[in-house]
Image (tube, rainbow, N blue to C red):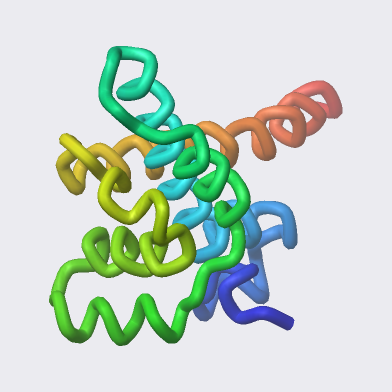
Amino acid sequence: MDPHARYQSPLTSRYASPEMAANFSDNKRFSTWRKLWLNLAVAEKELGLDIPEDAIAEMKEHLYDIDYALAAAEEKKRRHDVMAHVHTFGVACPKAAGIIHLGATSCYVTDNGDLIILRDGLDILLPKLARVIQRL
C-alpha cells in the first residue's frame, strides 16, 4: 500500500476509518495544494495575466502524480514545505513552473488546504453522527 495514501499516526490503524485516514493523507493534502494552484492560475488568467492554456492543461494532468522523493529532497534543500512542493509540481509541469504559486503566500495553500480537508472530514463524519443520534 502507498504510505502516502493513508494518514500515519499510532492511533490511525486502531481508530480511524479508511475513508477518514485517506482524507487526512499526504496524497489528499498535496493534491489539494495542486488543485489550489491550478484554480489560482485559472483565476489569474481570467483576470488578464498571460498564462498559457497549455500550462493550465499540464497542471490538470499532474494533480495526483506526486514525486515524494523529489519533494523530500527539495524540502531538505529549501527548508520549506510549500516551496518544496511548488518546485516538485514545477518539475512535473515545466510549462507551468513559472506560474505555480504566482502571487500567493504559503498560507494560501496551507490554510485553504486545511479548510478543504476539514470540510471533507466533516462530510464523512456528519452522516455517521446523524445515524448515532437517530439511534439514541
